[in-house]
Length: 120
Ligand SMILES: [Zn+2]
Image 1 (cartoon, rainbow, N blue to C red):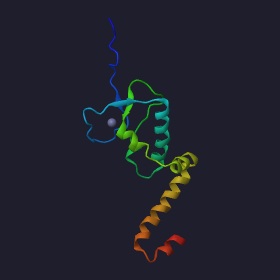
Image 2 (cartoon, protein in one colour; image 1 turned 135 degrees about the horizontal axis):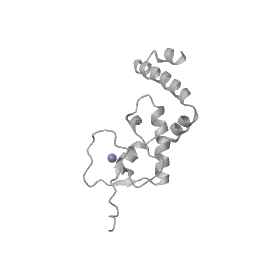
Image 3 (cartoon, rainbow, N blue to C red; image 1 turned 60 degrees about the vertical axis):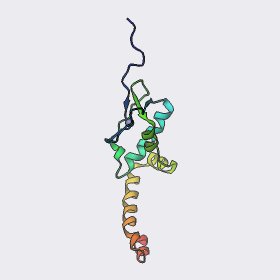
Image 4 (cartoon, protein in one colour; image 1 turned 180 degrees about the vertical axis):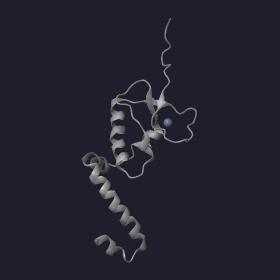
């Protein structure tokens, strides 16, 4: 008896919410290179204070089950080289920095007195 080829159920690991997927949206299996891209992007997402991607679990190696929708892949890997670098350096330091930049973000919109906050 011949086993059915291509019958494995592919799973999109980048789908974290209930967002609709069009019926013809194909799940693309991870290649080593695309998986590596996602693993690097994941470090950035994990370093962020808030990220809806934090719950994503990537496969350790590419296989015939785990893949992604291309649109999701673009969203997930949309991180800058700088962010990747920082995420790979020191996660603790990254968290400290994001805390202080949050303080700035709150102070800046007030305008005139912003400098006071920046100096502190
Ligand atoms: Zn998906």
